[in-house]
Length: 143
Image (cartoon, rainbow, N blue to C red):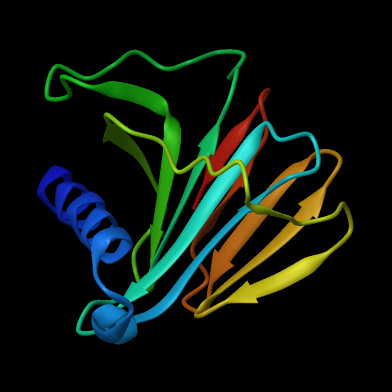
């Protein structure tokens, strides 16, 4: 998972510095945040790779213990792939973007195979495969 995340970060960084002529390899890259700005997400789909969704939550009330296998930050970043269960991620970066679009409370939006709904109680994102997460500062449910 760490190798996949590092590949994602490298790919996003490469996309941001590539000339416009080669940026066509990106089929989807979209940042959004909840109105409180406590939850920030990035949807990305690079040509040749399955789409991914990652969300970071600021100020988690009860952060989990960092596993020994993680030497970076753990507990506040969550990943969702097209087919697998949602997971907490071991990361050394953030998907926060000050220019991210706000997903208003009560609004639902589809990002590739993912659907996210913003509510005052938190953010719920699911994949077409039925996996996903419900995130808030107080509670994080992964399925």
